[in-house]
Length: 288
Image 1 (cartoon, helix red, strand yellow):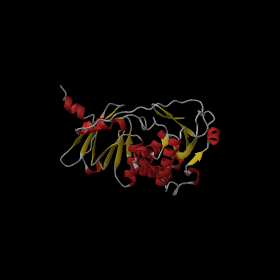
Image 2 (tube, one colour):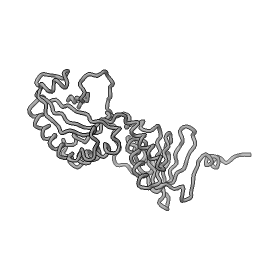
Image 3 (cartoon, rainbow, N blue to C red):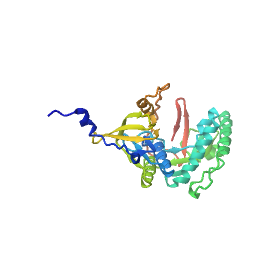
Image 4 (tube, one colour):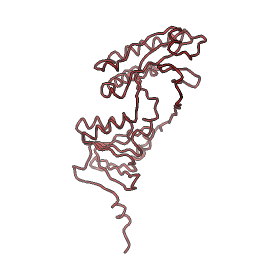
């Protein structure tokens, strides 16, 4: 007896149409942004679920420089609001998860008087915008004020640095994210303990919106091959470099596509002191 292929395919999907099976929020993307959204929304009493097509923190969140910075580079374009926001979020993260960050000194060598003047201005602004950086922060995670080091002090901190024309260096501080993969999972698992749901290896393949303002999400379990149907009142696109692909699933006309950038991280033996050394090259900056 012939089978109805359409009916057969529908049987591979699990779905629920009752009000209790409708989520308040569905988050697409299991990186650090999606993990934070899941955790925060769950604390606010929302019924939330996160879907990740690979493993948690397997994309940009694990391929980072492991720095929680306050946006010093944005001062170059006088984006003061963005820098203030970054510094405020840096402090918030240190209060929420002090076990995941540690204070790290960053050394910026100077080879001209102009560099010293420009960076001095930047340091003053950065320090002023982070006026509350140590409010309610545990003692071993405090961020010290910036400092100027003489040539001799700079060489003591980093003996292998280029010495010719060296004027000194500015030393400022940000946070190092010790293990971003674990940090991401901590937020996801914490949200789970409070009632949230999270599924990895679950790829979103379709997003539609019905007349009752509910979104119907079809996702594919990449291990079993089964399709699963979710209904939600809101969707957060936290897919990072794949965000424009998710937008296309909704049918949103995209005016500007994301331009992917690439950074290179090389693991070597220790080649400097206990501070991060920023070297300026024609192609950009290198952090050692």
